[in-house]
Amino acid sequence: MRRFLVRRFVFLLITLWLVSILVFALSRASGDPRLLYVDPYTTQQDFAAMGRQMGLDRPLAVQYLMWVGRVLRGDLGRSLREARPVREAILERVPTTFQLAGLGWLFIMLSGIPLGVLAAVKRGTTIDYIARMLVTCGQSLPQFWLGIVLILLFSVTLGWLPSGRKEGGPSHYVLPLLVIGPFTAAGTLRLVRAAMIQALDSEYIKFARAKGVRPSIVVWKHALRNAIITPLTYSALILAHLLTGTVLVETVFAWPGLGRLAIIAVNQNDFPLLTGIVLFFATIFLVINFVVDIVYAYVDPRIRYM
Amino acid sequence: MEGCATLGSAARRPTSVLARWYRFTLRWPVFPGFVLSLLVLVGIFAPWIAPHSPTQASLLDRITPPAWYAEGSSKYILGADHQGRDVLSRLVYGARITLLVASTVIVAAGVLGMTLGMLAGYIGGIVDELIMRGVDVILTLPLLLVALVFVIAFGQSIFLLVGLLAVFSWGNFARQVRGEVLQLRTMDYVALSKVAGAPTMWTIYKHILPGVTSTVTIVASVAAGGVIMTEATLSFLGAGVPPPTPSWGSMVSEGRLYLTSAWWIAFFPGLAIFLVVMSLFFFADWVRDRLDPRLRQLM
Image (cartoon, rainbow over all chains, first blue to last red; front, side):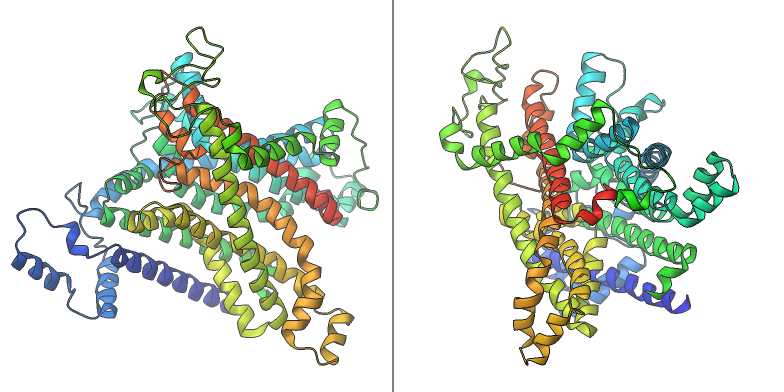
């Protein structure tokens, strides 16, 4: 276990390092970083002074290290359009995004797992086939389009639900959740179903049945416990996926979160802001991946030796 | 498979209409086949099919509703958008872009992934470790965000889009192929080839490659839907196909602003994405069933 932990941790660090190099290289490839800050009143001397201040006269490797040092201390630079530190702009919007992603995750788990179990138990029946068709439909619905259609139907035509914008009130969450749901819930359903089918066909389930254990306990305790490992791993990845996926949902519903901020940054060419958000998301994404692997290995000892 | 595995839970024959229909579509993918061949034909013959130019604006006709509305005109069957461009023609040319991007990406990612996967599986050791960790890195990076950074650094372009999608898609090919190769390399005919003194590359080309083609086909058919979806998503976010080239994703994005007055601008391209991706997924199921019956049980 220790060896696995260390190995996995080293991999996490290497990946983070690669991401940082990628972001740094791209920020340099996009042109002289000073140009982002230049206005009509900047003189030649100011320009040169900015270069020295930013360390542009030093070798690239040194510049990279300086940049990493700043990032590690939590200094992500200043946003160009918002005229304030990137960190401030990000932290301000973190709760909104996490709320949405967290609720979406809950919604997905509460719909995907029971439906997956149901489909597996009722294998080959109408319920199973409906579930399977829903899976394929759910996975092929473009989220951004689904959001627009839902807004068109429920907000514009029927006027039942607000078209997003978090202003309080639970009704604002309904449409965004309906958009986040189908795609990933479908994936969860598919995984749970496959794992449950495998579990239900195994010897210990036959034994439990033969022993006279109640069917509900066989399904929900014996089988699900073994079948849940893969979906559980997947579920944390869903959370990671949801966090970056909020870029879409927040754009469609004008939700004041990090994802929308990222798109605003793209549209306004606000490079420091965008790289800040990407570094933030990527770190969370990778750390979640790391934690999942560890939990996975803890729950299922077979993994450790792979 | 069903017979031997289901002693405990008793194999149930599907009886309902729905179940039969589902089985039927798995066996004969009529609907997906229809949608996909339509996509290919429309994509190839776009200039002959499209009634108007996809980029020619005609401001007098802006937001003309589809033909079945009283105010609609038969000139624009699916209506005209906010610049007076024919939605149908843009859809048709959008099919071409979708087809072009998806096929280029799948071929590039497939060749790259297959080559690296075979090397990793066959040679093993440090090569394997390097390649597979590379796959891990790629599969753990959030594509959407990385793409945004690339776009802001280099600007929108179709080459960038294809490159990014290909780089992010070869991982699955490599993983699956490697798994397959690990089994193939234990085969006697591979060992014999080695004994006969064949160079490594020759053995891979002659004896390993034919064994992984069905795996590659399966992965490609599954990946195609995902690639189209990602392309549409990136185009929707303004990080994909640059305007004025009509891409379904960017059409939805443009139409979003006119949702209350002209729903058809955003609706039809989204529907097209949905139908094509769904067809590809069903088609992928079918391909997998044909080529690898082992997996049939797990849908």
